[in-house]
Length: 170
Image (cartoon, rainbow, N blue to C red; front, top):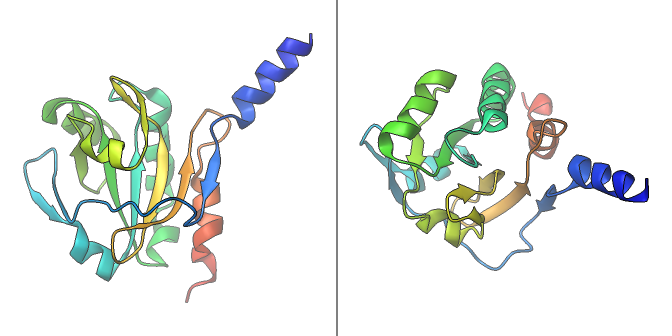
């Protein structure tokens, strides 16, 4: 019984960590290549927008796909505070592009085939998986805020909205 309660609490609350600039200085790459083969100038985007990176565990992850659909439904709220998104995923260009197609998420998807970006962000979950997270970048591409972990009871988008306070923007 005691184990069941601890296990349940671990599922509900596990792997959900907010970080607010307490990490060592980590910088997102200034340019990346999307799953469609287009070069993305992340440095320019971060100067023009609040840059948010959504990492997904794997291309097969149903909770990760649901996260993208949830954020897509709330894009009007995020547009109020000038947010822009990138999606970072393990997998081939084709597999990552398929997730983009299936979710119809209107922002670039970045395949991290060799985990070079996930490693910098300290988000490697296993040899094939990235830790699901939401990352806000500063203008200099350092991490401003990070919410690690995601599960069916806590997607993290409510924490993101609360942190950004987009509803209060004019």
